[in-house]
Length: 228
Image 1 (cartoon, one colour):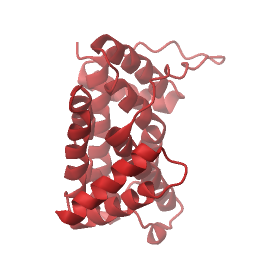
Image 2 (cartoon, rainbow, N blue to C red; image 1 turned 135 degrees about the vertical axis):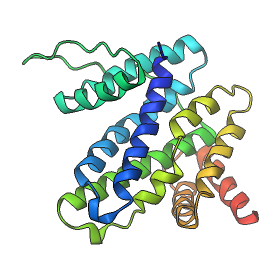
Image 3 (tube, rainbow, N blue to C red; image 1 turned 180 degrees about the horizontal axis):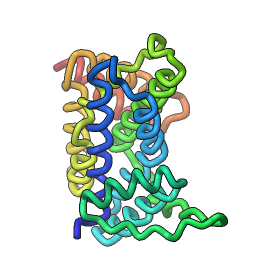
Image 4 (cartoon, one colour; image 1 turned 90 degrees about the horizontal axis):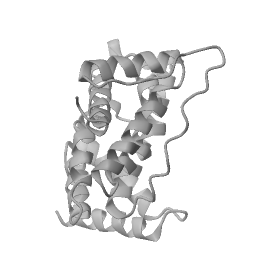
């Protein structure tokens, strides 16, 4: 059976592919779908990264199992969405029976702080999901003309991120380099994506309430992008 962590990563990949597909054509853009998927990853990006970055394989799998349950156990619609993905991927998600007084799954265990370049990656994906969710909401309200986030471009830039994060997280002695390579691939995916990422990195580098080490990492990435 496929592992919980690999399953979680593949669900992120499939989620991004769904957003890319529906955002390819403005005439068929599904605001409800985009809003629903982005809402999932608004809350689950950091726990997923935390699981992928845990020190041991056993710990990574434990955190992923708990994270998948927490992600899925958020009402009937979320359950159905999660089960569709886990079933297709061959992972058995053992959700408790849904009853009128159903106690939802506990929030995943604390994964520990995410530092440096990896935290920059978390921030970028998280912010993309927040902005994507807003675009989905605006579409539901019939206000897509007010949307400024390039949803389709970003979904293509982030394609394969779930699998890539797991791979980068497994690089115990070269994690910063691995995540820097990943962020650089996002940045260079297209001119429009580059513009968005540079803006977000500038915000992160100057955000007063951010960890100074993360500010420094974002500033270093900006300098490297300018030199390149």
